Amino acid sequence: MTIHKEGYTSIALTVLFIFIINAVVEYRFADVFILRWFIYIFSFALFITVLQFFRNPKRTFTNGENLIICPADGKVVVIEETEEGEYFKDKRLQVSIFMSPVNVHINRNPISGVVKFFKYHPGKYLAAWNPKSSTENERTTVVVEHKNGSPVLYRQIAGALARRIVWYVKEGDQVVQNEQFGFIKFGSRVDIFLPLGTKVNLELNQVVKGGITVLGELS
Image 1: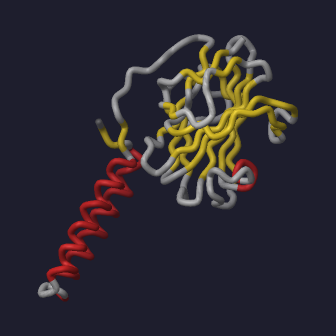
Image 2 (image 1 turned 180 degrees about the horizontal axis):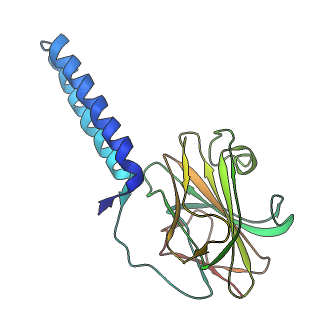
Image 3 (image 1 turned 90 degrees about the horizontal axis):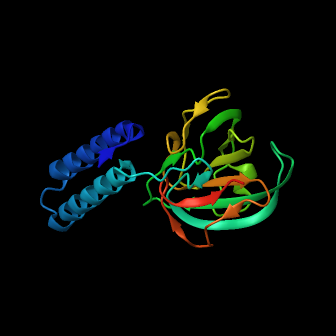
């Protein structure tokens, strides 16, 4: 397992913070045994938590020309027909994956194709499971057109803890299935909007793995 590049700064700041609070405790409260051990345990837990959040585990990816692969780790919280009002402006099949702070937060392209649309939206930081987060939170929208002409929209949505969305794509890019298209820090959601009639292989509350679990299949 390696550490994702988006974690370098956060990990360095965490180490600096741990060093400072431990130095203060050693200098000012060296005789308070319980406080010292509390800070030691807290520091260790904080470091491990931040380190695991930015992990980039090695994986054997699932590939398929007409397969739609899950773009993120997490739990399926929505599978429903809904109105997509930003790009398609019609009814689509929405699948949403909630990523908790303990999930890997790398986002991967569910299909290969050409980026036809990209937009970043600044916004609020409502809880990621709140339905309003899809339209009011900080988010990005990416639309990729498969070579068969089917467009798939996927949206990174920041959560209550997430304060930074990172993306690596722009309009006109040729993207490859399972390659990274972005990263969201500390709790978030990814929505996927598919053509009506798309076969979906997932169930509500199913735990999925980005780049591995088959979400569905384009017709």
